[in-house]
Image (tube, rainbow, N blue to C red; front, side, top):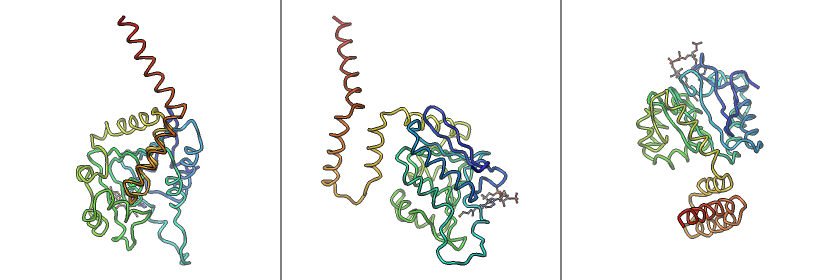
Length: 257
Ligand code: COA
């Protein structure tokens, strides 16, 4: 495992920290591999209910280590070292929460489109600099960004590479909340812990529906939701919750009489 990535587990939340502050947490191939490994473990470990992604030293990440782009290997279609990391994120069935402080550039901004909840500090600055680097955006960001913020903003940010201030990211719906840097970390971790403490069957099924095919017709979606709803209703998880509620109501009635 890369020493520039730290992994901690607390209250069913796995925290993955990019820890290379001298390079603004620029991500090397070893760091991608370590993050992919951590997220695969989070998916497999029944003791993990949520993943929290953050950067050390006041920045989220300055993105791909630019050194990774400079290669004497000019063979066609060499896969990106970021791919196993993004693949692990796509395969993760548990909520992913991020805290963005300072710079979130390139993959640092792209990964946010795959998160379930993002807290930004008021000094956060997001940027998709791909065109300026002679590249194009990746990992479905040409699709996801416009789904989230609309085509005109997505076009502006992806073509011009304009830096996006925290307040603008919030207005556009790219992050969930913005607060001072000292509170942002605490808030993001607390959101991850709240998600980790929810009934997990219901949470994961709902998350899967939200992330499902957005082009599905409302009537087809109603049919699918109804099947999931009924399976959840019959689950042990839900039955325990219903029973607890009814027992509590019965206790209240007994106390009143
Ligand atoms: N890859 C490799 N090294 C990076 C890096 C990256 N993506 N981002 C920052 N660094 C290094 C700098 O080279 C510098 O190293 P040095 O101290 O050995 O000279 C160190 O990190 C600090 O960066 P610096 O540029 O001095 O900090 P800054 O606060 O002035 O600017 C950024 C921060 C993020 C705006 C700026 O570093 C930057 O634009 N980085 C490149 C971002 C990028 O294009 N990423 C690729 C996305 S696909």
